[in-house]
Image (cartoon, rainbow, N blue to C red; front, side, top):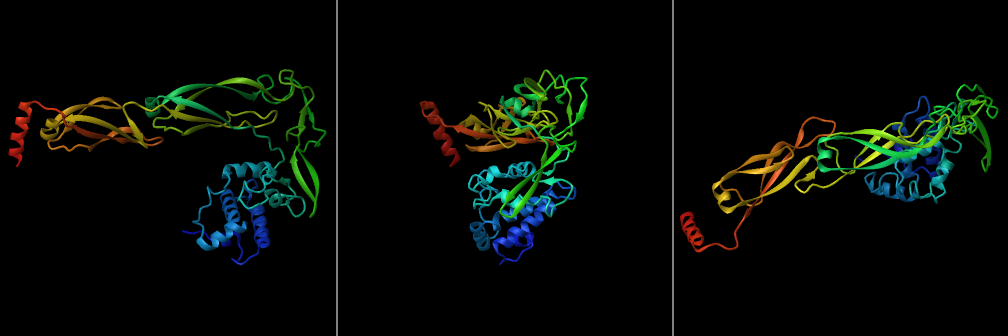
Length: 381
């Protein structure tokens, strides 16, 4: 069903672009997910609506075709919802608008301009909301990390435990990521007076705009160490090797990934580690072809076996098993074996094994064989 983007933004269909922009700002302010009363689902919905009707070209297409027209992946230009939310929480919209506005919406929509004054002190809440939401005491977040893991076909089907090694920025083992020498006392940060945040005033064409950001001196903690950790120099992180054991669930498929929360990189003292994503790459099998959770195999039988029927041995994921070939089997006929496919990831049961039978017809036969076939032909007629 086509979505009514005008209704979502609370404007009339004939509203001007300025009216649409104003309505979006108001709703974004109200539903920002980092606010206590925020609603991420609603925030996503109004952003989806503004992405379309806030752009003159897409608005024209929407008015003609509705919300089913091709939006090129939703946020366009390679920027997905996760990218948008990272920008929304960090306040780093400038990186996107600096690309000519094409990274989001494709029509020159400047996110910095849209969100620049949503949470300023002028008309905004007094509790310290900024571009990225609540900054008081909010720690930085380290980068997410991706590693590739190669599996054999059978390992992906039945699951396996693997150990991965990688070198990345980790929290310092000596100070445990605080940046303070063990035993050192903490003192109030002089840059922010213990508030964990500082205010920056920027002059714009609309006047002075105030933005609240995390204090860079104490990383939002409000306190700094009297003596810095000698091992990490007070950074709270070091470059080191990490080892993790990863349980690969049975049934995982090529290209799927596993997220290890908090196993990504550290961003330094007072930060929260990012996540580690393990992307699985599966070697193809010489025996089986996988499609979702089903397994496909092919077997060859002789003409007499097809005519009279037989019991043959086939390869399965569980080893060799017997398959009954009924009399009169046709070439390329398929037989489905329930419960012999791939286990369902995070579920119960398994897919099927589909066996395709190919009847081999000999190119040359003996005189005696030819005579027997002629007799058989007369019998069938």
